[in-house]
Structure formats: structure tokens, C-alpha cells
Length: 294
Ligand SMILES: NC(=O)c1ccc[n+]([C@@H]2O[C@H](COP(=O)([O-])OP(=O)(O)OC[C@H]3O[C@@H](n4cnc5c(N)ncnc54)[C@H](OP(=O)(O)O)[C@@H]3O)[C@@H](O)[C@H]2O)c1
Ligand SMILES: *[C@@H]1O[C@H](CO)[C@@H](O)[C@H](O)[C@H]1NC(C)=O
Ligand SMILES: *[C@@H]1O[C@H](CO)[C@@H](O)[C@H](O)[C@H]1NC(C)=O
Image (cartoon, rainbow, N blue to C red; front, top):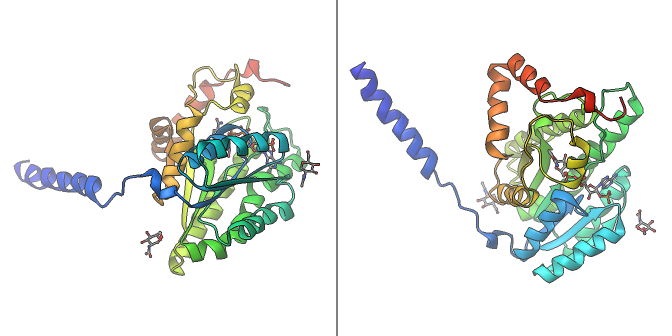
């Protein structure tokens, strides 16, 4: 026991000291100053808030979504907040040509790119999976394939700039959740594609960071409307802080971001050690009677 303590205590102490002081860089807003950043799905929600944070930090910003009127408003606000420049492209990510075109536009505007933030998703209904394969295909196109198309198109520029890809995912991209089967499918696919690509980039000495963001429930209008009444007890975290944590994680070149930290990290620990208990707890959190359209 004495010997164990003599070895264990200093060892744990050393580990902790290493963890705290191992050159973990602190985030500074200047890291984004003058950087050229694409944010997809930035007409509302978390993407909109990311655009405002980047504007305050003095980045060049290119935002996309389908609704032109909303994008115009966000661009105007970004310029007021101090963006080095701000422009938008409206179009649907169902169209891979449009996805690639957005990256082309960044090349025309800036000749380079420092950060690609992939964030858009189709509005999803909360319901039991109804065997609609076409719907799965559509969700996979918008929420997954367009991410791949944009990342592939951006790789040459990001390679030159030693830039970053930031992928916004969800706890539903790491753990099975009911009523979001097609959405979860696309989020799991993002993990597979980008975590594997990260390995290959390292092996090829390509200095592009990939940050996968694992989010819990966030208080965007879309999420609040979709989940109203369905959950018995999930609290939603603020979209403004969420947006900042995503940008910080990307700038610090972290492999994954967890937000809100404990609401995401604890289920992830359970996933590996007590998966059936976790599944049970998750099912308990839903009020099936209040599902719409069932
Ligand atoms: N909110 C949450 O609770 C939560 C939880 C976990 C993960 N996340 C993730 O966080 C990210 C942002 O979520 P959010 O809640 O901020 O979403 P949101 O408010 O619904 O915003 C979605 C954005 O995507 C755009 N969009 C929708 N369909 C599109 C299409 N076909 N083509 C191009 N753009 C399209 C929307 O604009 P238009 O409609 O104008 O196109 C909008 O700008 C997503 O990746 C989501 O999965 C969110
Ligand atoms: C952009 O929005 C305008 C106005 O709503 C629309 O006429 C145009 O077709 C849109 N462009 C694309 C590529 O969807
Ligand atoms: C990768 O790029 C970042 C940003 O330019 C730089 O800080 C880091 O030192 C680079 N790493 C390597 C191994 O070159």
C-alpha cells in the first residue's frame, strides 16, 4: 500500500501537471483576425452566431444558406460588427454543384482559405423512422455528401494555408437516439469520413486540422420548435456560447469539441462502459405521447 502510494501519487500528479501545462495554447480572438472563413448554414441558429463572433474578431467571412433575405441581414450585421469583409451565396446544399461553387467563390474572393466551417442541416422532423428511403437519401445529400464535396474542393487551398476544417456534429452522431434516424445516420457518417481523413492527412504530412464538434441540445429556434414537449428533461445550452466554443476549438486545432461539456462527455463515457443503461436513460427522457404526426 505504502509503495503503491509512493508510486501512484507522484505518477497521477505528473500526469495532471502534464495535462495542464503540456503547451495547451490559450485561445485569443486575434487568431481569427484577417483569416478567411466559410460558414455554411449561417442564415440563422448557431451558424449565424458564428458569423457574428468571427466578425467581431475581424475575419473575412463568406456565409451560405438558401434564404437570400436572411443572409443579406447577417452580412450587414457582420460588417457593422467589424468583419474585414463579408459576403454570401444563396443556394441549396442538395446540389453538389452549389457546394463546390461556394468554395470556388472563396477562391475568387480571397485566393485562399483558412477555415471551412461546415454547419448546415435540413430541418428534421422528430418522428419514428417511417421507412422513407428517399428521405434518408435527401438528408444524406444535404447533411453529409455536401460536407464531403466542400471539404474535397477546399483541400488544395487549406493545404497551402495550413488551414482547418470544422465539422458541426451532434451527440446523435456518437450515440443512437430515437426519432432522428436519418439525421443520426448522416452525423455518424461525418465522424467516419472526417476522423479517417484526419488520419490520412497526418500520414501524408498535410497540415490541415479537422475538428469534429459534438453538441448537446442548443437553444436555436429550429431545435426548440422540433423538441418542444418531446423531452421531459433536457436543458438547452445557449447558441451564442456554443458558436464561440466551436470557433475556439477550430482555431486551437482540437480534434473534437464537446458542448455543453458535461452534458456531452458523461453520456459518451456511459456509451463505452454501460451502453444498455445509457440507452434506457435516453428512452426515459422522451415523452412519446407528445410526438407530432404519430
Ligand atoms: N440546435 C441543436 O440543438 C443542435 C444539437 C446538436 C447539433 N446541432 C448541429 O448544429 C448545427 C446548426 O444547427 P442549428 O440548430 O443552428 O440549425 P438551424 O438554426 O436550423 O440552421 C440551419 C441552417 O442551415 C441552412 N439550411 C437548411 N437547409 C439547407 C439546405 N438544403 N441547403 C443549404 N442550407 C440549408 C438554414 O438556412 P436556410 O433554411 O435559409 O437554407 C440555416 O442557415 C447543425 O449541424 C446541427 O446538426 C444542433
Ligand atoms: C438566390 O435567391 C434568389 C432570391 O430568392 C433566387 O432568385 C435565386 O434563384 C437564388 N439562387 C440560388 C442559386 O438558389
Ligand atoms: C501546422 O499549422 C499550424 C498553423 O499554421 C502551425 O501552428 C503548426 O506549427 C503546424 N504544424 C506542423 C507540424 O507543421
